[in-house]
Amino acid sequence: MNQRNDIAEEKITIPSEIRYVREISSKIIKELGSRNVGESALFDIKLCVEEIVRNAIQHGNLSDKRSRVRIHYRIKDGLFTIEVEDSGSGFNHNKVPDPTHKDNIFKGSGRGVYLVRRLMDKVEYSEKGNKVKLTKRLK
Amino acid sequence: MGLKTEDKNGLIVCYIDGEIDINTAPEIKKHFEKVLSKKAPKIVINFSKVTYVDSSGLATLVEILKSMRIYGGKMRLSNLSPKIKSLFEITKLEKLFDIAADEAQAISDFI
Image (cartoon, rainbow over all chains, first blue to last red; front, side, top):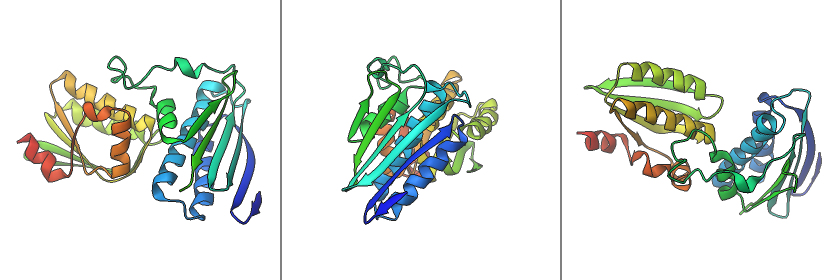
């Protein structure tokens, strides 16, 4: 852990097991909470971190425990960023159906990626689609 | 997560205490399967003690609503925090669910 003034940064590698999702989000929320980040931003970050780490485990690595998820988060200069990379073949984020469309509104899945796009300030996918970087301003 | 159900003159009010997410969704589904098996015609879910909802939680609520609509049941949600209400607005699920400010309002809307 590199912690100096308001800077925090950590790289973590986890097995593809759902039980690590809350562990990761709790660690990040604890870091942010100690920096007086508002409740609304904490809620958004918890939700988005959990959605993308879970997606990496379930959809990226197909819950194969031998496959790893690499996480790199940083709190610096009033910004929170996190990169999550899985070992999968990637996906085309532009082809994720709009869950708010009338044909999809009753569907059970598809809201995670959409919520992340709406709640974060910036969402960037790698070309392959197996790595995503989220950025959120900490007001 | 805690779950409590009260029958108020034939109207079922469910109180969920804690998080509605991927971890609690199976227990919530199981609870509502039991409630819906009796074809409860009107259900209010009181969110006053709900602290967090994720996409799996939203999906679970949609499933419950779909199951109720099959037999003509009606559901209302009440006491949502502004943050949780905003998730319903962002995902446009506010169009699907009847959302009342508080439990009294949700009940009176049913009568």
